[in-house]
Image (cartoon, rainbow, N blue to C red):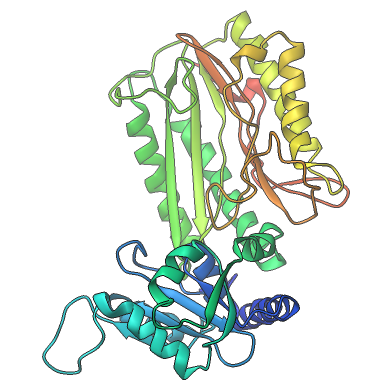
Length: 399
């Protein structure tokens, strides 16, 4: 498999043309992209720096070739990307944060001047340009040098493009889901009395990393695995990384995999030793809520329906006060991606949207129960890309 998977030149060119069409419809001269994930989505370049300290901008004019302004620290990263055939933009301008005596560039303090001069060169000096995030910040930096240019908040433009995934994106998510399922098998095999969640998570992450590079040697890969005895805390024990696993514990784990930037959540609740009747009941309610929430991930339903059906199951069982969070969130390039809230977001689901589904029940001092799956919204039925078992029989660790 190629490093290009998910980032083909044809796909990036199609995205650029779609952006130009949307700009023309709104009489906008260009789109300026400054958010790092949006920049990756538009250009195919995996940004290697933090924009808050080394500002970046990629610009797609409604007419003309796109261009990008980066810190010189990214020079070789970009060169490698282009040599691999991955990347939309070849017109790149660099600034330096380390002044030199020869071959001088604009410094980071002169970033605004470099951007303004490039805009003039490209004849983008009048009218409105769209900005994907914080248009006021870009306006504050450029307006003194480009007084006839106006800056429009276009954060929803790329949000709406990103919310429905194309087949190349979905393919990466399916592969990441299968890899995370492999990691869940290794996780259960690694649970032992006296071990800590940190030990197990580190071991499983190592095994997954080795497996991932065998499957996808030319991908960008990110792996993590975690989990600890839960006493009713949604994100595990705080400040007790050395707490050993003991009989009667519930462990809410998390096994995540990101391939070429696209990632999944895969969480399961394990019970160490024979579960009590209370644990069985809470687990059953959580599982029913999760399965019903997955079931509504179908085109035509509403985002908020995902949370509503899960909460109803939990409330009907008498555990409504033990719900501490929404049932899910958007997935994709971002771990928590737009949409921002399933509980009170009433937009209509469309096929190709991707969400986590993870209702939880938490009893402080005792146990927590949560499964999380990554689910592709389907036209007729949902597609769950994380398929590891959810049944108590198989998630009970016999000791």
